[in-house]
Length: 420
Image 1: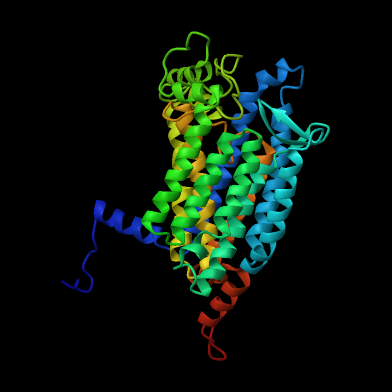
Image 2: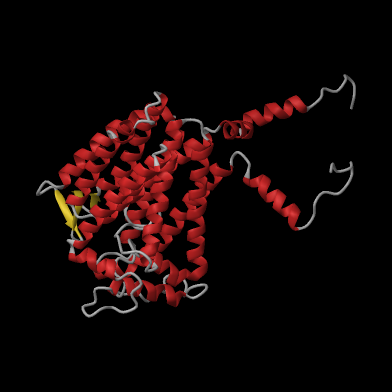
């Protein structure tokens, strides 16, 4: 029923709901969600890296801020990459996809060359660049697969070839398997899981039939199960899901002490810097298990805030992918969203004891420049795509100072001569 002129609008909860719904549907909502949530996660991650790494740095006879300084430098470089990526047009991103893939594969091959590649925690996936700097090429492989796969699928969609299975799978799946094979040569099961999730995300966005999707999933699951069963370390990680006991030989030490850290945090935590588990009890407190330290120092309120920020980032990425008409933007935005959310779920699930420990960092939050740089570039991609939506582009144009000033000048009526 139409409302009479002068009648009062909805009040109370309904009015708040309507205001929230209108704000949520605004053109720039996704843009601000991506920018705000990613920056907040990164800043909070810097704080937690400093807090979680102090003791380990002192154990290595290093300054207490050693790991924080390296992460801060990586964050500054990553911010520059984010800004560059956010200003680059989609055509330039597509042009960079093939060179990035070739360079990444070349570096991943170099990792397996004796004397060049180095092993860390049993996984040979690092290249030392000199001094304290090192590079993990497999982290850039995620970004390379997304950009190259998005460009490939977009070109095939323009030619209406994705309805054929051979065009849907080839060469996307063989190239993904090449990257997975190079990663597994170094023994990095965690990165292989995330890369597989990205592949499935791209196939899902491309409209892969359920039978095909299920078939590829079954093959990947079987291969993964065989890789786990043939490795004693991976089997022990699988057996530590939900463990509350350290085990006869302490094989579940990290999983159990991660639960201890979360349990001792309470509602609001013990305070920044007051973690007990980081004093030699919890392995990798500033990398894989930084979420446990955050739970101990910031409590349930802090961990839920981190989860909310990742949920906001994931929602915004899905919104960008769902509202665009450009197939490349849809595949790239969907791939980046799959990457960040899947890696966050795997990391947090391992800390909570719901998933096996995969050894993957929490995106934008954990220590590690090799993981931070490509992730921040990927966030810049999402920002660029969110800015390019027609409604968002128009809203941003109106908010420019020059445009706003001209608009205001048009609204001012000229007064007759002599009028005061």
